[in-house]
Image 1 (cartoon, rainbow, N blue to C red):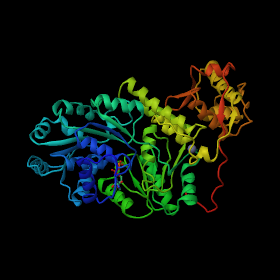
Image 2: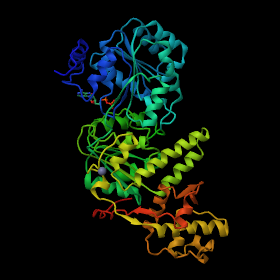
Image 3: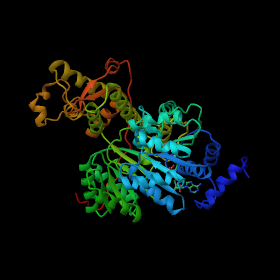
Image 4: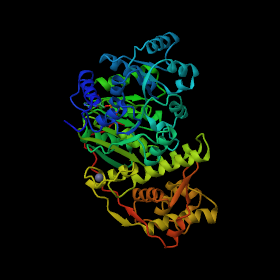
Length: 529
Ligand code: ADP
Ligand code: ZN
């Protein structure tokens, strides 16, 4: 039928039908599979749910020898192998969760040529005995899953992945296929160079997930905002709610349960059994809401997740894309909703300041947060901005909040100057630094205890900002931050000037801000807190 009618093509299609029970290939699966079957290297960028697994599973079945799959998802290996075995594929895995006997058994199967696929945790390849084992068998291909983990520029770097550069030196004739669902152009290039895949063919699928509606809202009362969303648009639907901390996972899950939502918590602090139990219920039962830290979700294949909500700002655009990508794998309309506030940025900066690693590492983390912030504050189509981040051009989508309710822009130069001069006054006259909350109180002329304590009602800027409401000042502060016109630092999120603040204060630079669309009405039903 298609242009490719070589023997590999028909054999691959035969395997697709006989073993996996599917009628036809999707997207560029066929091209990728043929390329690898005939011994070519490949770098595959395909969004979650695009069907990456078949791209190495089928070549492993068609080619002679064992397909070795390197994956960091140790917790999922058992499930992946069980699923393959149920289809009659001879699969096994080696990782740190096994005891010696289990490992020996898999090694024996590998050497006897009784495996089609061997899943391997990356740290196994640092163990010389594993390398010697591999050298004694016949390998059909190396698949490097979650290949973005090799990139230091990326959001999920794992040092064990660096060792994968030696695969090619040891096995120059074995084809390699690297796969990932998130990679900016920079990460993409880094994967190719670190893995020595410069000569590999690159297969880049569109990252667009048209059925996902992207929405980002200012955070006021996140739990209630979430409940309102669930009641209005997703009653009885399955979904995932991401929170930054374990404590907020617990609190949010409790809150939802009290308000009649079937919610379960998931975070690394729960014991293994509770975690596994909650995950199983989420997968098997209808309409469960999983409230989780980002520890949850990698490799979860639940097609009917109708919404993914973030109650805290994700650490990077890649992370956001990956997490929201768990919605709507069945192609049906789904919602990606995020609430964020200035406090999120303060918290992220604090985490970065205290993180391990060198300055370069901290700068990378900072750049990731800045990009996420820019996505939050854009007046453009969210999807255009998101896809541009992955180097893909597109036009306004009509299915995101800024397309559906275009954000009006307004001239925020004067409010920006007022806010910045308050920061300047505090610093110059008193050598004080305060966070956005205190600055807002000063601008609004509020005589709070803290304002009186520090004599801030005596400042000339006290009460000069009554033309805006408190929420509007918060929005101004967030947007100045997103535009790099102020910065936050320290544990308390104090506001400080940047190199560019002076241009605004000096009247040389106008400030265009986005006006938040009017909030939807609050739900009529009572909420329990
Ligand atoms: P990814 O790893 O890219 O997130 P998977 O390999 O897990 O995606 O595939 C996502 C889902 O799509 C799986 O349930 C898989 O069985 C299914 N799938 C993949 N390829 C095909 C195909 N050609 N026809 C039908 N279903 C497919
Ligand atoms: Zn849009």
